[in-house]
Image (cartoon, rainbow, N blue to C red; front, side, top):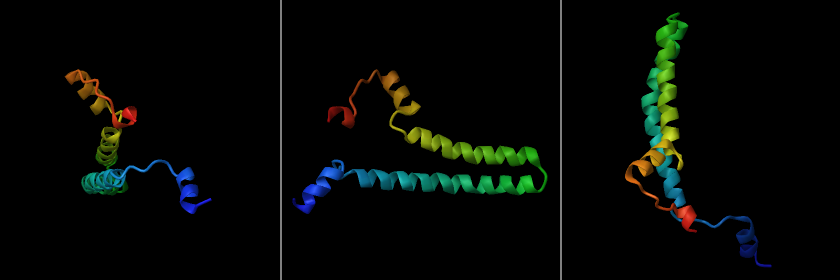
Length: 98
């Protein structure tokens, strides 16, 4: 048996665009982290200084930024579902077409 045949059995079909999607998602996450890390660090600073309220608010804000980015990135996220409902779109995804 050829080595490429063995590899083809164990690896799923490869989409050439998939690495680019992953790269773009990583860049988006880095951008969100650039915005989320400063309030998170400030929140930790305020917590250590004894200002519990403002510290928790800033840490919550930082966490919410990352959580919303991740939620909006999901294929079945609310953004996609809401846009589909508003536009009345029943378009199939690439996975459903295959």
